Amino acid sequence: MLDSIRTLTDVPVGEDVHLAREDIAAARRRQALQREARRRARECVEQAQREAEAVQAQAFQQGYAEGVLRASGHLAEALLKTQTLAQQLRNGLAQAAGDLLAQALSRPEWLDEILERWLAEQTSDSGAVLHLLVPLHCRPRGQALRESVGRQWAGELILEYHPQDRYVLRLADQLLEFDVEATRERLAPRLLASLANLPETVRLLDQASRQALVDLCASFTDSTPAGLAEVRHED
Image (cartoon, rainbow, N blue to C red):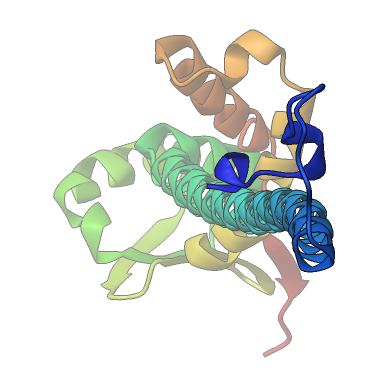
């Protein structure tokens, strides 16, 4: 549209043209309008470019911020899951360690060994009465237990059962008490602490690992457990 406006420069050279003062003024105004239109057009284009760049930068910043927040959320969630899983694994390992200790401490062979060691330390007195109080789950092997004690003790034996998971041996003024549950609670943390010293391959959840745990539990019961408390009883 602006290209169709005739200006003073559009007048053919050499033509004998007579221009009125008003025509010259109008031509100058048209030139001024054309320059103004072009200037405003450039400003509009530049403004549009600046606005487009600003919108793009803002969108990038918002997207970056959202990405950071999203990544932070995923990281926090992953850390929480890791901590939860670690706690679950530790609880499961503690339970497994406690169960293994309970199984090891309830073995008939273990009780026979404890009786043999304890009786070997006592003064031989055929007139004394040996009182043996054991848990109810030992009743099925009561006869075998009597025979085992009889090979080590020639005196009188009183064998009784009770519902608690606790062993009580009494001979004259000597008393030996052993609480399986209390001993298991004391030994389980020691067992868990010992796992840190095991080889890396043993920590794998395979048969070798389970066997290592069993062997480690057995090491706690090779000698008289910490839960055995021998006290002198005065009648």
